Amino acid sequence: MKQMFLALLLLPVVAQPPSRRVASPRIVALLEGARIAVINSADGSTLAERSLGDTSRWTSGWTLGVSPSGANVFVALVARSEKETAVVRFDLTDYSVHQVAVLADSIAYPFLAVGQRSGRVFLGSEWGFRIAIVDPRTPANIVRYASGRDTMAFGPAFWFDVSASEARIYTSYHGGGNPTVEGGFRGGAGVDWIDISKSPFEPCKGSKMQLVGTRFPTTVGFGCGSAHGRMVPYGDGFVAASGGPMLHVYDSATVEIGSFRIGLGPRNHVMEFAVDSVKRVAYPIGPCEGAGGVNRVAISNPANAETAFAPLSTVCGERIVLSQDRRTAAVSSRDGFALFDIETGTTDRRVKLSAGIRDLAFVRD
Image (cartoon, rainbow, N blue to C red):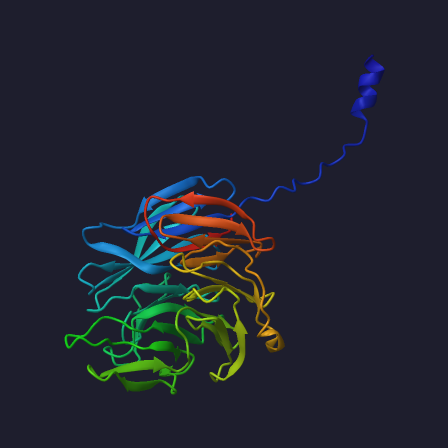
């Protein structure tokens, strides 16, 4: 027996292969009421929910941004007076909340994006296309710029983003904004941008204004590119929703290089989509007030622009985001979100949250 035991000790040790289990990504949701939640995408459980600020003073902005490392999420909180904006950092390692900067600019910056090269935080106004740039490492040195757009004509903004190179900051206008005192409407649809690689910064030069209406003549701004809804930086240009059956792709000079049918039916006012820039595929989504549905649209080949096909999924919603591996999509609705497989269109689960969702994002573990 003793000899057998010694023989076992002399056997070579075989290393065990590393586990192939992949941690499920978390989903961060910016909620109404200045709150933020973290959800486990594997089972839909809430890992954390935190207040971002005093709700008697602050309300949630419209978008969030993830840091290049994936360790932090940045959010803009807008004062109820709409004359201050707070930049808040949410630490994903311990779920703590930290105030980065407060901008008392007599306007609000409800839109936020994070540059994936520099980690800088870019803020955008709802009207008139004004921006502010905050570096979390030196938050006292805030860069501000006003494009000079007429605040009565350009807005309200629908989306805000920064290009991958961080050379351009984009905004898209929803159109049909707040009624004027005369009973007309202000604000036109379109895409505007500011080139921040130049000194001084330079807004795009193709932006235009137009007098519309007969009973209540109103001047509205239409930006430098055509759009109605979301825009996504893509290559040297961008992809834009039209509010109708097409997505449009533009180059850096705002020349349309492709127009693609989304195939979601006529009863849809489609303003929202996501883009997989690696596979060069867009995923437009119809709102729940319409016919809904999600589709997969190849935006690399203009020859397929008129191809008609059945929707990938029947899910509907107001916002769609893709996971880092581009296999799963999260679609938000009024009280939660749905997760579905973007290859098969199969809905994995639906998750309800404590408040309405302003924005959401996948984050790496």
